[in-house]
Amino acid sequence: MLGVVQQDERFDDLPANIRQLWDAQGNDAMWSSDLFGDFLVCPISKDKPGYMQLVSVKEAANLHLRPRT
Image 1: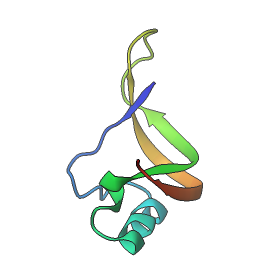
Image 2 (image 1 turned 45 degrees about the horizontal axis):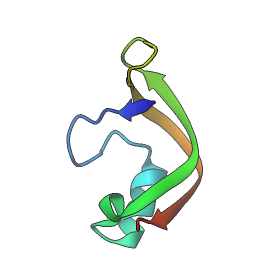
Image 3 (image 1 turned 90 degrees about the vertical axis):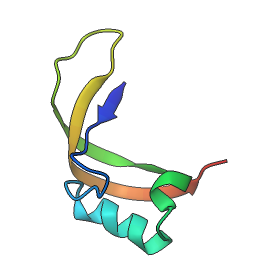
Image 4 (image 1 turned 120 degrees about the horizontal axis):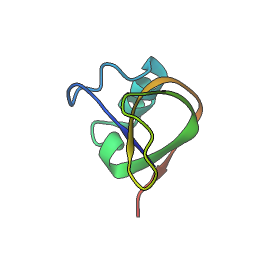
């Protein structure tokens, strides 16, 4: 399980294509939809079985949103 770490709630350090996709859907898209795609992540914390590993997202491709139900 991975936990994406962001320095602030503006998500400025996410790849531009993620931010553009959310922006195109409106202000609440990041909270009201699930984001799917292929992600390249960089570990921030060590991998420890049974615990969430903290990562940052460096690249994203093949993105699509699905509304949460």
